[in-house]
Amino acid sequence: MKEIDKNDVDISQLFKWSKEVPLNDPFTGIVMSVFIRLVGDADMNRAKAFGYRKSADLRKKLKTQDSDERVIFLAELDAFTEEEAIRQAIFLLELPEYYQEALKVIDLKEPKEPKSDAPLEEQENYQLAVDEYPSRYNKELERIMLEIREERREKLLEMSKESLYTLYENTVINRLCEEELKDEYYKMCVFLGTYMDDKFTAKAFNNYADFENIHPQLQVTLKQEYQNLELGTDLLKKLQGVTG
Image 1 (cartoon, rainbow, N blue to C red):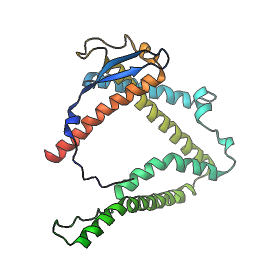
Image 2 (cartoon, rainbow, N blue to C red):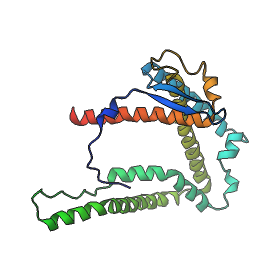
Image 3 (cartoon, rainbow, N blue to C red):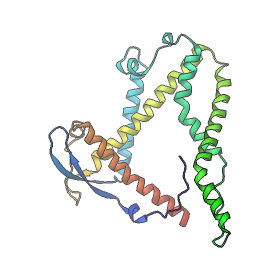
């Protein structure tokens, strides 16, 4: 839900390029700390290349008939008894695109704040408008998304069942490969950017296999902590764009 946030950003949190991360291994019960820092350009490119390779490998498996990955993630054409079922699947898969498109076109201006010496009733009305704005914004967003979906439906109604299935298949594969790329990219960044000491001299993992063999929850924690650091730099860039 969109809210009107008047609070200042604490920019002191945006200059952090590294952090200490406490860990509790659910399997061994060992409690320890590691230190994560954002990787440099060379390691970032290495992580991207790693992600692309993993994505390409998954795409190949998803396109291979009877592969484990295809059986798990894709329904075959004969599993759809009606064309409408394929259209509904496509709608669900494309929902994030509808949302992003709606965000680009929505035009609902925030309430205009009255002057400090404005009458009390005007101040009250402004506060009421501020309180109602998130609900109004989301209703308008839903309305636009529904319009986008209906326009999309008109185009899908013109397609044959085979064409609909091809679209469904490609959309599923692309979505899964995008997720694979992102996941593997960040896993490699964590592997390359995690150390045992705050001087960043002792790597936490001797090799990538060591990282992959730690408890999945620890991987999730480390990846989230790395992304939090990265988020700080993204916010800093935005602030620099506004003030620069």
